[in-house]
Image (cartoon, rainbow, N blue to C red):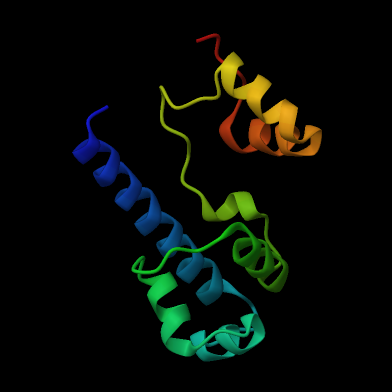
Length: 116
């Protein structure tokens, strides 16, 4: 994949995650404003707005905090993994070396292993 294609793909994924965060927040039975969520995350309202608009990167810890706050799975924030981006055997081995629990989470998130 060329660098421009990687950048375009990364941007699309970031935008979709942002859109999912906003959609889930707005669908809550006890609706939370962006400002209320920002306070609970201990970040500025502007920083949270930038996350929801896909203009600011979000880390795994913040995604986890949002999933707890919204009562959903972290997986709900991510788009479906497109064909060709599944975990390879090499990916699985690399993740397994770091953390067995991370391996289960990655397989759940990205789907079954493909032999590549």
